[in-house]
Length: 267
Image 1 (tube, rainbow, N blue to C red):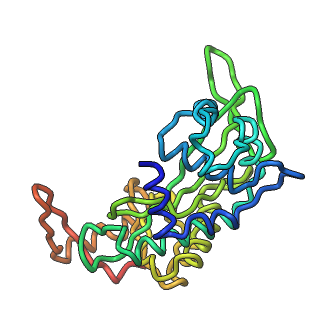
Image 2 (tube, rainbow, N blue to C red; image 1 turned 120 degrees about the vertical axis):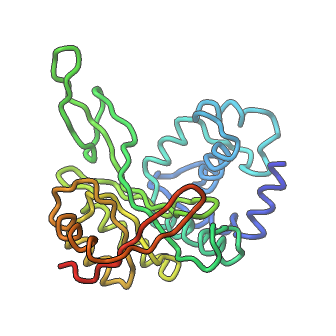
């Protein structure tokens, strides 16, 4: 079954040729970066829980030679390679796969002819009190009546909305000393460059309701939808009295009724 899967991704996406473009920062590496990536990709396909579980699987005699070759990466090699991975070619490969998936109709929108929607949102990946790196964010938390310093990584993720499968387009790290919206600005410019006409609308949390970021969205010819959770915001207060003067459009979706106001007078 796994062999059939890889033949499919080779036929539709040109997977082996794309993988050969990947690289990392290892010096005099004995195991090619492509082999490392295929091993990690296989781990996700098989839903293995860790690099150590993958290493045990790769030790099975002869099973993985056709996919990964005779020299298979250890768990340490996987971690070392990924820690030095060049994300540029990887992003190009992912964008190629997304464009191919839309062109071959492997992505299924919930409604025909609808707009292509992407969501941006922040996510925390992990934290530690013992280890850190120059890219770590830092916070102090209360734990058992004492203050503990935590080191953590947080990213902004771009993901398709309203389609199957809801693939992830790209990820941008939040750097020390900057906010989530700043990182989202870098991510937004990159995904619009890489995906262009495959993005019509971006959906956002209330934290992104900042003029510089939203002007950047509009300047690139896209639309945005922002969820406002704080009634104290000036924009919410501006919209509230206008809603009382305009009859909303009502959309019925099963038991759910949505009311939509178009308010061009917002300042």
